[in-house]
Image (cartoon, rainbow, N blue to C red; front, side, top):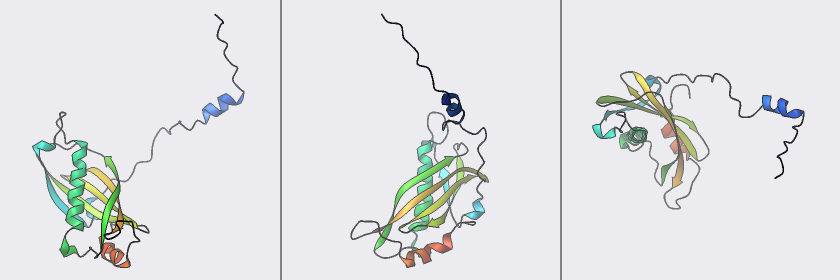
Length: 171
């Protein structure tokens, strides 16, 4: 059996280790805490006993259902006049920051607003509040889809006009 020989490391090894891409700063800059008043559309929701997981708090997947309730209440309400004939919006991405636990029973308020417009998509920013405290925030990317071709299509000017009044403050 031959003994294992360690290779000598190049002189640059120590310098490269000091600047490793895996190094993390000691403190991340904090995001500002969302304010419910910045979200122009709000809907009430309740925490159901069935929303809980074995740890006794609301399961993280249920937060997505709460966010969906907020989007559906805003985008599917014919009184808000944000629909445009021949198109629909399809969610392609959802980013969530979980900030506080939620427990049963409880009353929630989901805030929704438009954060920004792209060529064929827009981002909806959302928050979940309970007793004045933000429990989660999310950003959903929705793509404009032509109902006949079932393909992404540029956002019509009429859609931008109808969605613009629902922009969140500061967006």
